[in-house]
Image 1 (tube, rainbow over the protein chains, first blue to last red):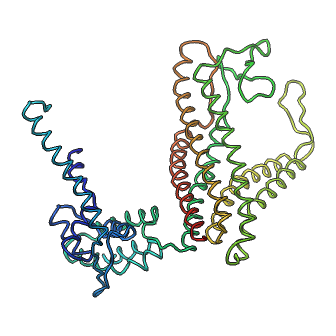
Image 2 (tube, chains in turn blue, yellow):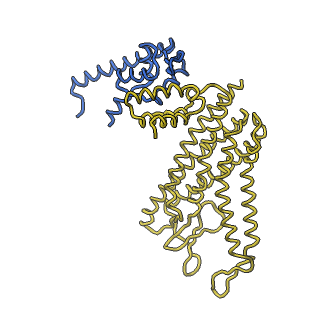
Image 3 (cartoon, rainbow over the protein chains, first blue to last red):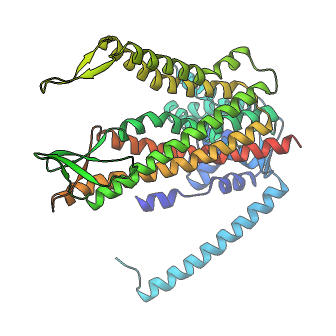
Length: 111
Length: 346
């Protein structure tokens, strides 16, 4: 149960910003892209909650509407914030993997 | 029901400003997802959860004075109303306690908030009663805390009501006439309650007498009518309390308040939230005391508390916890909203 929850714990902010680094996308395209890259399946209520927050913080900006679909793109500030967050994530991931290696080598993992 | 009706219903539950900004886009995304095979119920549930988040956090809400004024008013109501609505349950729960030892009723003489000088009815009249169990002592303190918190709440609620009366008089766009009248509902309830009680006293028996060891009997007056009026007064008190809460909430919802009035409302909601926490703690201590006193009474001769409405305790405690949560959340948001409104006023 706990391991399933841990696997699902992915920051939706990071997922949306990362998806937008691939170019501007509207809501449905974002959902599909995030699903394909991370396996996380957003609903429209969740996605637009995240987009509203990102827009309010100036991390993404809406583009003119095309056929009832409004694309969003990442701002320069958004890209800077994403880079900082990803660098921390990479640092933590690298450290965690190193420590797991050492733990495995010493046979210190519990049953 | 058609699947797209579900999405429509969910979208209509979002705030108006959100619908203006996002409804068309979200509707299109929902249609695309349904075409791609996602279930309508799943989309609906996600939208409902999103709606609660938007209403709670107001993320993306434009910095407009009327919008933030309304949000702060709703937050103050969220912080205050649950506790106000809870009050009759707490009164019913705490107002029916008594003391008992060795199967007889225990009384204590003189005016005191805390039981001391305990006496019980025995064959030779009033006899000294055994002491309270340690758990019953905890219950006494908890009851005292509930009483004090209830009184403080009453004072806070009346202060809030007085502030709303003043705020309605000086409200932004001219308040509607019915809002001014509704604001006086609590006063009307108090007047009707006092009138019914006074009438019941007037039509009731002039005195009670007992002759030859018979039960007390009324002299003069109409006992049936007096009982009816007393019951009616109680109904007016409880019903009027709830009606007043609803009326004040409606007034606060539909009348735009000045920033000063909002600051006062925010203070009232903060005090109410603090009192809600104290009440929940007192009810929790009370519950633990009730459980423990049954064990302690079995190990010796003690005086214990008995409750007429013990079954109401779990309901009161659960409602108090919920009221606590709502009050704290409402007070926090009212504080933020009040600051935004002050900022928008420059």
